[in-house]
Image 1: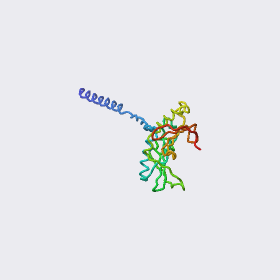
Image 2: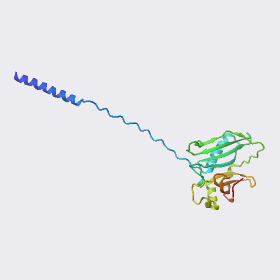
Image 3: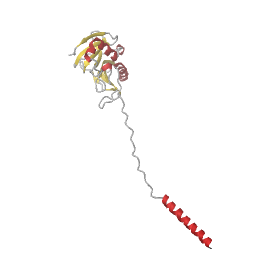
Image 4: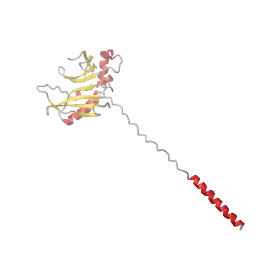
Length: 220
């Protein structure tokens, strides 16, 4: 009898021990704080700098989809905080085209800019506008534009332009290409300033041959 009682007591004590161990292991659960989600950083895309000729080709393609007989009237660069024109490069170029069959003008923009308020990235066209009354529209064949703007810049630098920039890569340089009525050839005008009028000097280069023609002051 004492042996049975002792066995019962051992079983009871063992049960109590297991009970308390179980209670201790199932204590209050600690809820770990959820880590805040980290939003991926917005990728800042760099601007694309172009010389004039690749943009001109892309705008020419768009213009001829607008009108098969569209021909260029002028090509010009735009200066902004991304590029001031040094080395013949800009993030925005514009070209005006004329269609004789439509008697309409349309301007296209080739943009690699990422600036707020700048022209959209890629090639876009403006609303077409009619020829001005009694206006003589001087168009040229695209093949006449053989020399790119970076080459025109180098030539202008070799003929006095380097004295104006003095190594300053932020010095504004503006590029304008159009038909010269007197010679019937297309000329690059490399203006060391913000425009053809606001300038320290202009170098004129034949856009077909790369020949340096002359230097001049602001056009008025």
